[in-house]
Image (cartoon, rainbow, N blue to C red; front, top):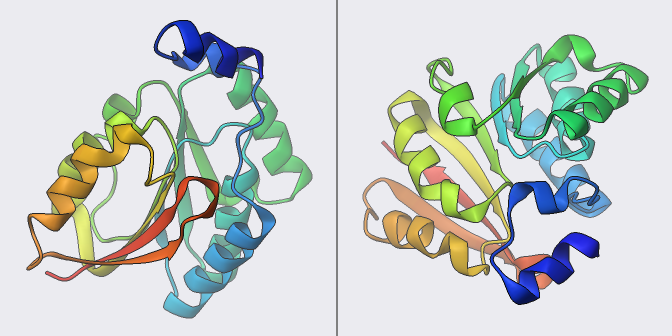
Length: 185
């Protein structure tokens, strides 16, 4: 709440949210887990680990599919807690948590990405997807949380301007909105 209050007087910064518990809901986590199992996703990318709740669902799915998760978190303080959470959930062997700016930490992401979870600073969604797009496998899925936030607008415009590449459906309007996008090429 403290971090969100700062947003009234100025634009929020990542450090404003260093203590904020920002996570997907249990229903979202179960949906993503089931989706990854059904699709047999192995190469999984996450933007925005926070304390690692969503990453645990990804790691649990990777454990079942023989896959691996690369996740990112900008704040070192959150990363330390996330790493402990992974250990407690017995999924740490399936997760590579990279600390720092995702534009830098994901540059060497592997080819044949099956799934991306976008749940970080919305203004980075577009540059991240443009950077990772050449590494997407045909049929890869992009789960975008908080799609209704204004920072997501450039991402939406990019996706909508390329209907030959991306097919999107809205999953929910609640909790900031969620979309699931399939990469068609």
